[in-house]
Length: 160
Image (cartoon, rainbow, N blue to C red; front, side):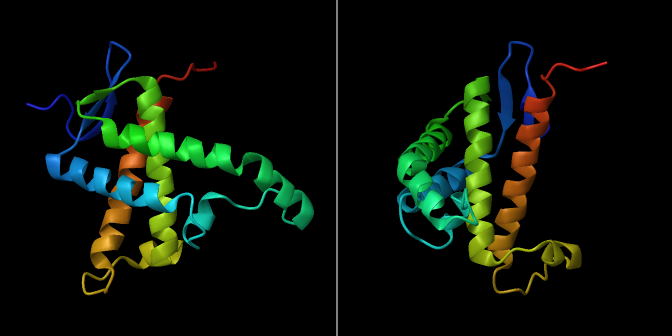
């Protein structure tokens, strides 16, 4: 029997239980591998991962990119590698945070490729839509990322 109903739950030992089917884990590994190949490229969908830091100052933005782009790429690649390497049903806090970041990157790139908008989800996805499968994957990634955010946030100190 699985430790959680489905998704991510904090465990008493400080780790996080991740209940995914083997096919879901394989899908995540495949998506992460694809994004690893793209993340350092100039692919327009990947540009969403590196928005302008200085929209009104192209020279300052170019300098910012020159100084930090490689560090940002490295961080994203590390998070994707952490996601791909996970073989157990529980993660450390650092691994859970890496998964959350990697899921965000996967969603951003897939959403950019699919032209995802809020209106699209407000209307609902027609199963006959040519991208229905990919849109379903996007929705699942969104749910999984939210599950990680909720689990990680549950350990934050409360203020009263």
